[in-house]
Length: 126
Ligand SMILES: [Cu+2]
Image (cartoon, rainbow, N blue to C red):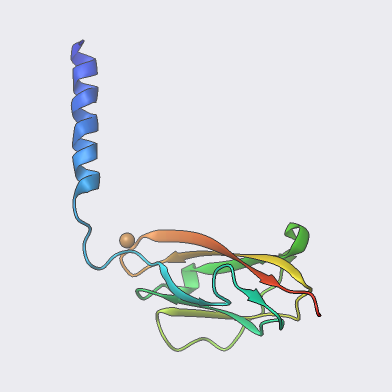
């Protein structure tokens, strides 16, 4: 092994050790609960999207987008702010049946940006 390779190998093992360290309890924001729930099939157009996180989030620097059937963006209406610092709630227009993708990206109180996505389906009328 050349000196450079040895240094790279040493660096990689330090990195590996760091990623194995336990994380602080105040972890970055993740969705604990949502409405609609991930992969839920709803029969009535939901009036809003609600996300509950495991920590407080910076709402001004956080956002949610919604894509509907065919990947078309769905406008999310400005709604009365949810008073909880852990919650995001957005009003929805009436939705057409089909599959929807909710994508959220938030800045949590610990300074980390996290993002995630989940789907729900609005079933066609019977
Ligand atoms: Cu974090």
